[in-house]
Length: 197
Image 1: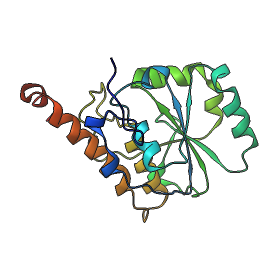
Image 2 (image 1 turned 180 degrees about the horizontal axis):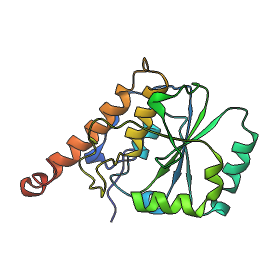
Image 3 (image 1 turned 90 degrees about the horizontal axis):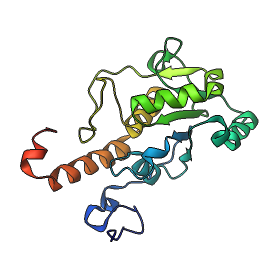
């Protein structure tokens, strides 16, 4: 029998994060291409991102057919589109001028799954790619990553918004993530919690 969820944040009642959610509005359009395996993942940060930035668009899929409607939407958009993904051809967002009225595409999944999404969707490579200048480790300590430059999708979104406009206050995003991390850590047995500290 599944645990009842909060009707607002959709987390289980004993893990409700409503008190830590401070909605914010942003000029860039955030679109998340989400690997299907992430949808029900309890530690997925995209759910938090949607709570803080209500206009966030999440499209679940794996191949080009799954993203057909999104591709049409992007083709009809009259604003620049950027893929947020580090590659040999990507440009550092902190070192280039990016307008605020843009569409930012994020790939949501483990590094392996994000790379697979990119390989299965060569149409994404038609868009200029941006990467982030990472000067600190991820705060998303409750989820192990294979690479030291790993970020949660929420962290990547917060850092991109800050890179585009340094005056942008992204604390509603970072506070929500910190609250989830602390809540998850508090619910772990002490010996398990020690592995994540």
